[in-house]
Length: 283
Image (tube, rainbow, N blue to C red; front, side):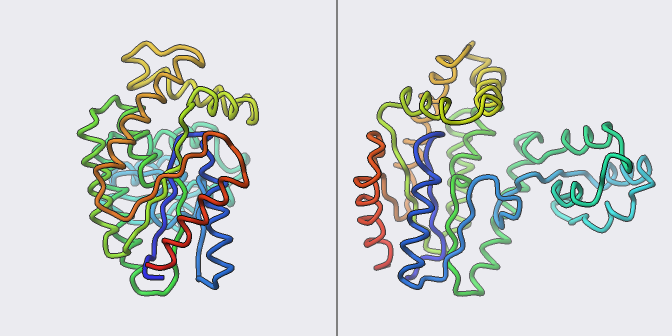
């Protein structure tokens, strides 16, 4: 196949992970050299899951303040965008509670790339996508990503900071231009009954997940502006997000497919994925 990148997007609870996993299995059966990265993978090649960014001045201050772990910080420091990125999971692997205080981790979490101002987030994320494309172009492997292409820009732009659709659209289009050399394929998993799909996800997932999700959606950015409260408030924000993502999907000039998973019927869903698969492998 000619495509080196397949993107699976959709709202929470729509069936993105299931879709990505099924597509991954189908491609492997056809002996495609495919690498799947699901949401939350700390080693994602095009996104930062648990990365903290410090300007060079801030990093020098961090080294001065926590001299006892200087060598570990320097060991894992990656120079990016006139500053330093620290992978949180690698620090966690080497630093235990006896080596650093809670205040250290507070500093690390507060510098998470998805807690930065939107402009800096965009700079860092687009830089990483560019680096990924350069790497992917040198090999024969195809990459399959779940939800980092549309979801993350919409989440930080609209949900976290209340940015306009135009700002978010520009961000995603910028990413689309970057990945164009990979001949990408976009698969969007749609849900007509958003209330049902989200409430289903709330029932199936942990209370910690649902509480954290609703807090994120209701108490900052778009949700705060529109006084979103409780599960119904979160659903209202998700409805607004769906409209934005639909506009983005329509505007993107890449190979794309929309799969309706409203019924959560696994056999029917697999058949629809198979149809997309047949179109994809012919590329």
